Length: 153
Image (tube, rainbow, N blue to C red; front, side, top):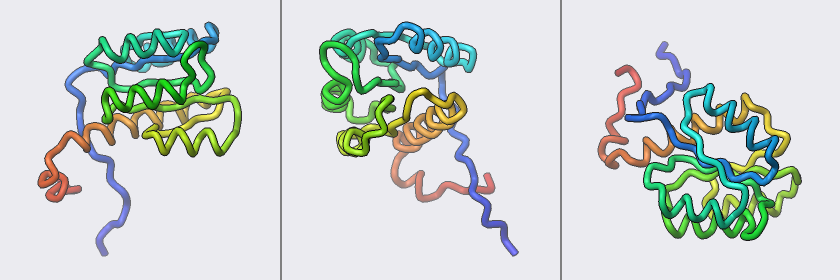
């Protein structure tokens, strides 16, 4: 009988993924930056929504944004909305300390890839980053290539 186990798409990136961390808590920003760096991500940081939007508009190689819902100035949901208007394919993972379903629902409606609760489980974060990058690489393929993917290849 043929195996029905799921297969992982092997879609290699041409370069290290660039992640923007948008977090106003310096300690959290430092921990995330260090964790991502040792896991071979390139990292940029912003402490406010306005700083984040400036980076988003000026950094064409941005792959993922880790975005706190509550950042000073322009809040995370507004940054998400503006970033998606600027680049609808940008992967944005929201972070929040509040387990508020309404916030998570609104973020997903606006195009967030996922919404994670703080304090972050770094194993879950890594899995979410990998899934986000895989999804992004998959979307870049032509529709006809998606149809002919061979799991045995």
